[in-house]
Length: 124
Length: 322
View (cartoon, rainbow over the protein chains, first blue to last red):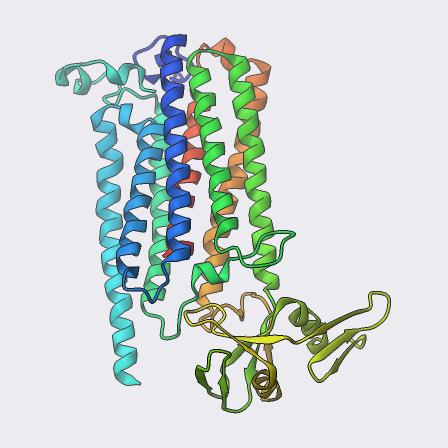
């Protein structure tokens, strides 16, 4: 079988070349994403240090952490891993099964974990 | 970068056979499929952590209190080191994406430069993780269990009632000598609240304060006569740092277990990523991809490298922050 990574100028992803001018624009976007990811991380650390766990805002803070994490993940996957520029078919094949599986796993594991604690507390 | 993926092709042509409906090469698609399965592995690990944590009957350690040390410095720097590690990994992800970009311009010199920097960033991260593991294993002072119930008052007048078996934490300088004393080193002499190391490396430490709830909410320092009450009520049960049986961070051993497994598994991914990057780096230098006419291999290993960064973003949030 012919190795498709050795075929030049075929219709796959291999002809993904771009010009010098396009490169300048892409690099600008890379720098933007870098600054954003760093800023979010620094913000998260400040939030973690200044909002204590017994504070009234801790639950809100936790959700802020989770949303910011998903935002960071989105930028990494869509921009750094170029998934945003791939064909929609590929994007869906990768993302939809993952979110179905992991969403179910998170739901069932946290429900079971909480149930375990409730059971423990009702016994003791 | 997508190349053909940006072109509009009719559904009939795309799915009619004879070409990739995803407009990606076989290798790149398989890399994505591998990453999906690997992401499920890490997702499973972090979910298992959430499961144990939600069901834990004992207080769970607080990230800002368990990870607050920096190399060569004394004092409390909550999460600074972990944030620094995150930053190193983000930067190495950026240099990788720049290497991929240079590859799209068939710029060999650019790929060599950025891929080289990515490898250096990877080594920095693996090194940081080695230090963090070492610090986690050695601990910061250790703890002893009380033999009897004690009631103490802190400097602000707060009253704390402790039961037999509760843990009280020592400071690092005193605790590290105490660890050797407990292990039976004959050169360590304990006299009240002063501990001496005699011999070639003579060293003395005094117990200035003891800490309650060091790694959970409500950390309090106890000094003076109240401290002596705690010290005199100690049992012979000590715990220093962490291993696979006990840890000073939590009575729940799974905390240390998950630390070792999740960060270890991630660190192993970073390490293999560095090795793969080095292999591709030498191929770039030898001109393999220049002759091939495209640098898609750099893009494929780039996907893996970004994935490692992606996993760390989640580990950072769910293991350290939340």
